[in-house]
Length: 131
Length: 365
Image 1 (cartoon, each protein chain N blue to C red):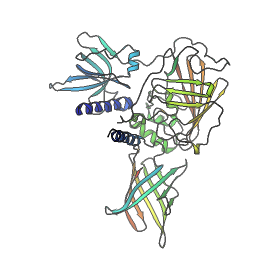
Image 2: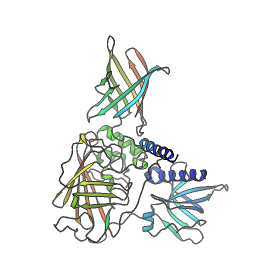
Image 3: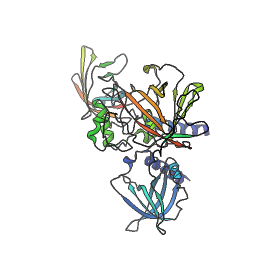
Image 4: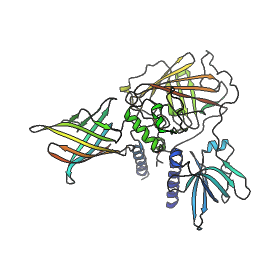
């Protein structure tokens, strides 16, 4: 019983420490996850990794066999808006992805980007949260 | 019992918020508050002590206020102890109130109401060196010692300007926490890329409230030499390393290897708060090269940002027994348009050791 209690306490402390460890560098770098879709019942999961090399913000949507590379992500630091385009593989050719979003809570460990996601002829809202 | 634990937890959280948050973020220096009432409790704890008093307002309603009086180590140095005020004493407190709705204040003075005796004044900053210092102590082979002479003790404290600003900039006014007096000076603090300047200004405008120090994160980089309670440099020549022991922060330590090993590759480094440091002596100057920093901390007061590409070159020299000159060149091409250099001096505090000063894990706001 004591071991279980000690484990639970250690876990809680560990989680709090992790929760408090924000990434304080470039606000977009890291792994983000969330979803997009035209409505609450039609959501598509997104994982996105963004990098900053000092000149360009790069990215990958859904890393893995179906990864979609994003060459350049535009960040307007005067308004903290984010914009990027990419081409996903479609059954009959590339499908254009265009995204415009707002970076929120920039000081938070779990900051978010919300906005509009267009993929082919579909359009919806999206939310990404930094892991 | 349950209520006692809850109250204790609430106090610890309150105290942590109050003391490890930057004071500018917690207290409103533009306002003053005068509180009169009876002392109900004295909490003599690190990192900051509190006196609680019951204050009756004009309508007769009594509210308990938490009055921060500072770090116990500093207070005891100024002959103020946990028994300087007693439970039940009627006191008058002058100070600055917290910015939020909390009934909390930072004391400037506490006066015993009946006798008029001044019980407490906010300790002044540690004075700088007095008089002419002697030559820096040396090892038998002639190399300058960064620690005490044999048989003595002491440590280094930051006593002068301690904001990191590019050394070519002049008249950039900021307080000890790194808050600029004028935000238009941001461009002169360091040559920041646009994203970095935007982040820096955000941190400045929000009074540094998101400083990782408030969550007990370690003060990596130059910031370890900006913290209250100073640092000790322990030279272990027999094993080729120097230990930097921090009195502030979270009583952390850092290793500078001086055994001749090469610096590793940044891409292979395990990223940490204090990085990987190798040092070498250039005549009387210790030159330390450090890489491998994570991005979970602010590397200086005031919120200048950095990335994992941060590369620091620090230079330590001791022109006399009482002075440690600290200079750091910051190279982070993902954050700054070019490398830049700043620094300050630290003052020797003879005959004393750094003392315990913990920010307790888990007591995060």
